Length: 70
Image (cartoon, rainbow, N blue to C red; front, side, top):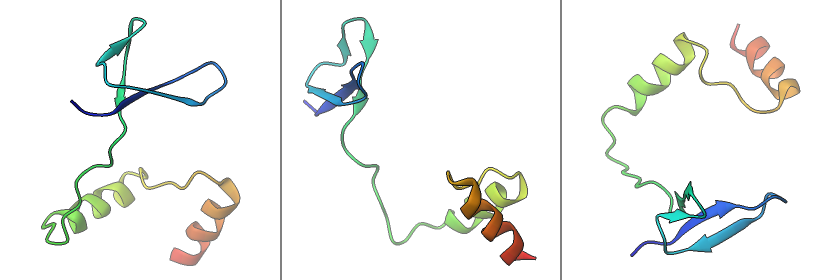
């Protein structure tokens, strides 16, 4: 059994042990595994930069990153 969650109408997490709750598939409440020996992280970051997938959430912060990279 793993701890799972769903978001309610106000955006708060509802924790459960079920995989499906009220007809909605729940998400894992645990973080993804991290390995300091990740061989492919450099390639993933390069691809995200190349295809503009590495965008921060704040647009003001994104402008700072774009201008600082040039």
